[in-house]
Image (cartoon, rainbow, N blue to C red; front, side, top):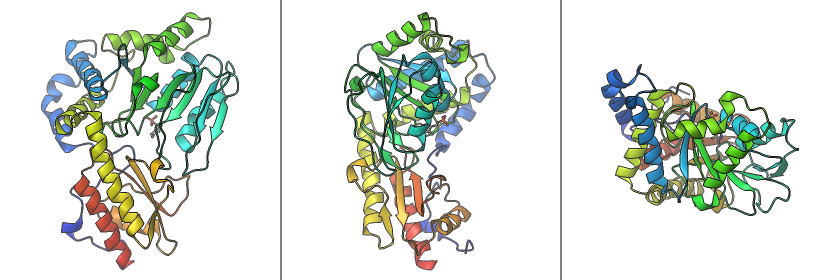
Length: 369
Ligand SMILES: *Cc1c(COP(=O)(O)O)cnc(C)c1O
């Protein structure tokens, strides 16, 4: 069955549709190769590397249009490490979590295990939907997930009360709209919307967030050095990280941010393109006799991660096996969701034409299975 050969003229030019790690643009890799001799393997305390960290911070600031006083932090460790940093160095007593899939659940699990915190206040919703958000009495943090990567559901972060608003934007950042005045910490690693590699986190922080970080650091709570967010603030202001960063990751992300700004413009312009791609994908599924968008509410359907259920008569595993054998990669359902589903990343680096080619390839395969 995997012998099926997709016609060359049907195939996407780039077959990477993973939800993270996701497509890294070949042009950015070529740029890295050009500068590698002067950059890789050089000190991260010297201007060459610090200039790239600064370039990334300033690029992100420009793309998002930072409100007054907001700053861009950079730290080693992906979003999973950052959950631990928030648990130990940010949450005072109790956090509210909106749980609607694997990733939103993991942060709640981290705070639930911390003996210095009260049990988290969890509002959950069945997979494929999003929880209703609202005030959380007794909580000093509200934890949102901009895009639940395991299900393809997006959520709108809003300020409901005095709690500081934390947003896991690991897959949503750069592809979904956001009003940063509603947010205190908007954090993400770089292997999804920013088409780079894993292992680093950027966090856009409000002045209130920085004040909270400094207050917890000054308290008598023990904070392991790696998770000390006050150290992250200090180092980020100097365009450094506490321990050695992945310099190639910084460079590739900076290339991607510059490319997004040069190609599309502002974040709103990027979002408009994302909307058009998402309309294509969900429109295709709605029109198909054998495919259906998994997320029933059109408003909740992600603009960056699409989840499409297939009719029981068609095995998504078989469709994915044929795609993979033909170089079209990583559109399997999230493993723990266990659905007969295609799940694909359509981050800004993924061309609209390639997304259209993807759906045409799936149609072609379905006709022949
Ligand atoms: C991928 C992902 C994570 C985990 O990111 P790492 O960099 O691997 O730690 C967390 N949250 C969301 C929403 C994700 O998509």
